[in-house]
Image (cartoon, rainbow, N blue to C red; front, side, top):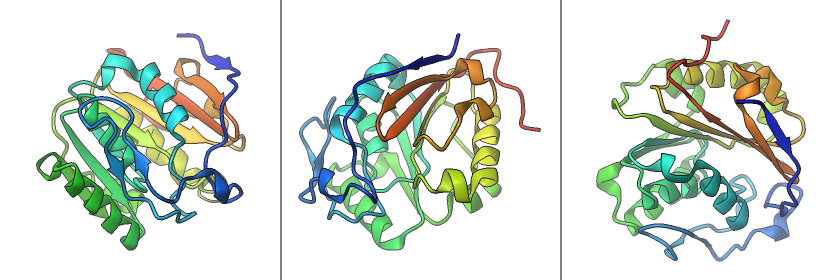
Length: 219
């Protein structure tokens, strides 16, 4: 699939430079079984959840491929991406969050939706979690990678390594969603022509569908 770098008139999402763009009263699931259910978010700028309309656009692009997947939220924040995936038909979710108070919020949000039996919340570093090579269920993955944007600069080698390894390890029919800002070039990832990159300033979102041919292992 040819790489698609299409400009879209996106909306600004919350971030360190845009603290007023996120509703501190909470965020909502926007589709599926839990549609309209509210999740906790106190406005902590380290969390920076994806704006509703950007999230809706992402799930429209993923479409029915969400169904039956194992959602893996690498930098979970509120957990809204993985919980949105569960709402829309994902089988289970793993949510990793390094900041312990934020991980506690994720657990409360999981409990609010009574999804404890389908979710594993891990408090700790994504890089340490993946280094241990956790055992994963056999179903294809739906991986969300939405870290602090600075990670793509300050921890560039680690980010490229973990994304490359996840892409290579993911079962066939896995889907990968990566959110960055303009400082990250999706051409640095394996199979750069396979990424569908959309612009939602200041965010850039790339989506990759892993086919039976797979992707080359990271060098």
